[in-house]
Length: 289
Image (cartoon, rainbow, N blue to C red; front, top):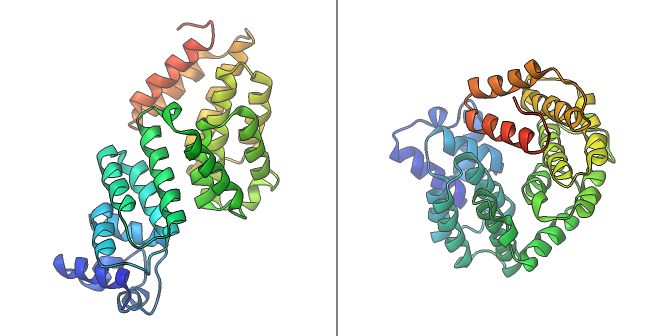
């Protein structure tokens, strides 16, 4: 029995759940039963979904695995779990707990440990608005790691998306142009949403650096993207930046559209983000509502 399957069974039994109650609709009961018995492996995203669905703390689950010498969980899975947990709950104390655990682990190699610690440092710095405090060695380690990954899969996109602000505009252009060598339609829809978010963040950096032409070039990719419910947020922000860039050229813009964007974000529970966008707009244009 593999360690993950065994620990999942323990968590399920502790909650008095059947296998179907534990895993559906994420996995079929038949497949999940094989996971518990160690005959099948479970993808990191499916594992995380099952833990969330059953209100099992991700960090505590990892601690239980590490104590048992969990050699069957890959460092890539750990990265997925750590990052997902960080961005879902934005829980800095938990990230520090995980960092301490990883720092003292006896399971992963030194290289794997150093990489995961660098990623955790990135999460903590990003959530604390202290990316500037990251050491040059950590930045270089993350950049080297990105270059070693052969394809722009979800993991690589997620790592880069969160590291984007620690790199220069020139370095970011290299990464983004590498992503855009392929048509956006060749990526899965979920990965395309990550790419659009990366572009939005880079556009904001360009505007902060008064490189509006560069921002406009990358904004075209967002505006050309077909709208889906899944990318509604990114497309909405794409329109926000379109209005912002027009205003920076002293062109008249429909202020009711800008107000509508703030309203939509507020109505969907993102009032703080709407306020941040409004402040960003005012700080980078001469327009005041």
